[in-house]
Length: 507
Image 1 (spheres, rainbow, N blue to C red):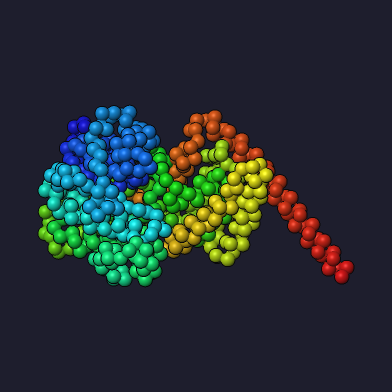
Image 2 (spheres, rainbow, N blue to C red; image 1 turned 180 degrees about the horizontal axis):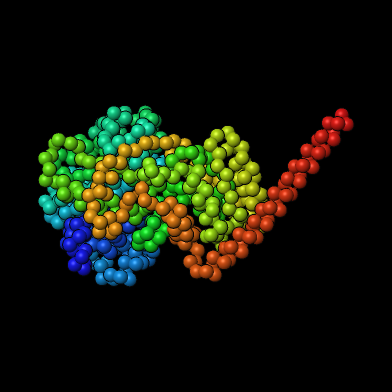
C-alpha cells in the first residue's frame, strides 16, 4: 500500500492484518467480497465455509475458482494472495454447520470480522430446507460469533424483500409481520417431519409470497432478539446483478432475476413477459454490494464501543436512489437499445420482447409467441430424431415468470438513511475505493457493461471482434426473416378477413 492510502483510507487500515470469516463465499456476492478484500486490502486471512458438491471436495471447489473470470485481475496483480484463502469444511444446512471441533475452535480463537451471506435464494425451496439454511444457520452463526474472542464486526446479509408484505420499509425490524416467532418456527422444524413442516407452509407464510422472503424475515428477527452485545448489523440489498466496475465490468455467474429474462430475449427464445413497466426495478450492482458490505463491517467495528441495549443492531437498506430510479419499463428499453450492440451468435431468432401485465392476456399472447412456435420446433426435432425440448422449456419459463410476478408488479418505498449516512462518513479516498452511491450511478453505462458481460459470462461468447461481427450478421439475417414472417402472417390474416367479408356480403 502506498503512503497516501495508509493515511486516508480508513477502511483499508481497518482490514489490514485482519482475519475474516465468510459464509456463502462460493456464491455470487461472496466471491466478489473475497476478491475485493484480497485485491484492495492487506487482509491477513479469509476463512471460507465450503461444502463438497457435485463430486468435488472443498479443495477442488476452491481450486476451480481460479478459472472464474471474477478472480482474473486479482491473480494477475497479486498471484501470491491465494494462500490467504483458507477453506473450512462445513455446511450451513447441518445442525452444527458441519464444522469439526478443531475448525470451530480455530474460528473462535482467530476471527475478527464475520460476513454471513450463505443462503438459499430459490423462491420455491421447500420450507424445511429454507428454514435450515436461512434461519437456523443464522442462529447457529450468532451462537458461534458469541464465542469468538476477537470479534469486532458481524454483517448479516439479508434482502430488501424480507419485509415485502408491507409497502413502506424503514431501516428497522418488523416482527409483527410474522405469523409466529422465529423460535416457534424453529421448534416446529425440530419436532416435525420434513413433509409435515412443508405442508404447514401456507399457514406459516401468511402474506409472504415464498419461503425465501419468509425465512429471511425470520432470520432478521433472530438477529434482533439474540444479538445481545454482539457488534452486528444487517445489510438488505435489492436484486443483485452484474458488476459495474470491479473487478471486471459486467461479471455475472448466475441466471437469477432480470438477467435470465434478457438472456432469454437475446437468444430469441423469450418474446413476451408478464411485467408492470411502471414498477420500480430495485436492481443493484454486485461490486457496489460488496463495497457496502465491507463498509458496514468497518462502521460496525467503530460503533462497538457505544452503549449496548439502547437500540437493536442497525440495518442498511440498499436499493436505487429515489432521485435516480429505474422502472422495469426503463430497464427493458435500455436493454433493447443495447441488444443490437451485443448480439449473440447463438440466437435462434430476432430478439424481441413484449411486456404485458394482465394475466389472461399474457396467457393468450404467450400461446402464439411461445407455445405454438415451441410446438413447431419440437415437431422438427422429432422428425430429425432428436429429443423435443422447447415446450418443456417454455413451461419452465412461464412458471418462473409467475414466481417472480410479485416482485415485478409492486412498488415499495425504502428508507435508506443509515446507508446514506454511512456513505457520507467515508473519506474521499474510501468513497473512491469502496464506491456504493446509487444516486450517482449512470444507468446507461451500467447496463451497457452488464449486457456486454452477460454475452461473455453467461452466453459463453468469445469477447473478440470476430464473434461480435458474426453476431451482427446473424442479427441482420433474422431481422429480414422476421419481417418476411410478419408480412406472410399479415397477408394471410388479411386474405382470411377478405374471404370472410366476401362470404358475409354474398350471404
